[in-house]
Image (tube, rainbow, N blue to C red):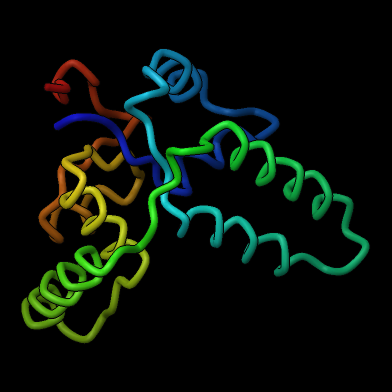
Length: 150
């Protein structure tokens, strides 16, 4: 694997008032040139902002967080490309056939992105991601030594 794709639940830890120190230490130690986010993460943060009531002070806080995230990851925000969508179709179809009707759209798109880009997917949703065929790392629980970069 050549780097890390950070799921929204990992990135969001940076915005928490009492963020997990283990996750923060791990994030701070990552080489920026090997660390990526998906445009889907930017979208999910926007979705969260819009889910707050108008006038909620957190809207502005999270909007600033999203803007800072976009600036910090400039050049390292991965699109949902044609090859990712093709792989997403394959892996989500296999998942649904194996596990029933539950669709994992965002998780499956992130898993496809991580597979196409040869990235470990850092997430709390390890079980879902592993079932989709991606290399899943949980920064709250896993030892990063077991997830080397090539």
